[in-house]
Length: 113
Image (cartoon, rainbow, N blue to C red):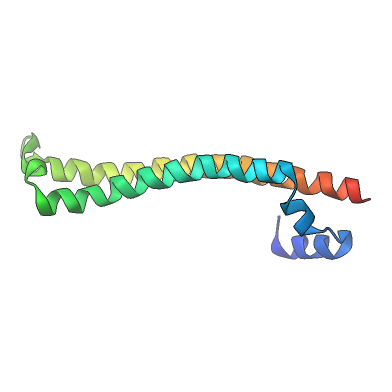
């Protein structure tokens, strides 16, 4: 939903967002969202920082993987693949989060009206 539409909706409905925020279904929603985001972020950060750490402090990745291509190049390419994959997963999951948040707001609007 566009920002302008959200602002107009807030003005027209007069929703009490503090009440929405303290509702059990909103807290459950935030818990599910956090359960998805935290492990994904931790995995990304570990995978991302592992390459510079391993190339700085070890020589493990300097060994050949395929012909003259070393494991450093394989790992670096894998980071691109990881970013695309995590982005696709997040976009799909964010759509469900948006829908769920919209349903919570609609429920509170109906209770108010």
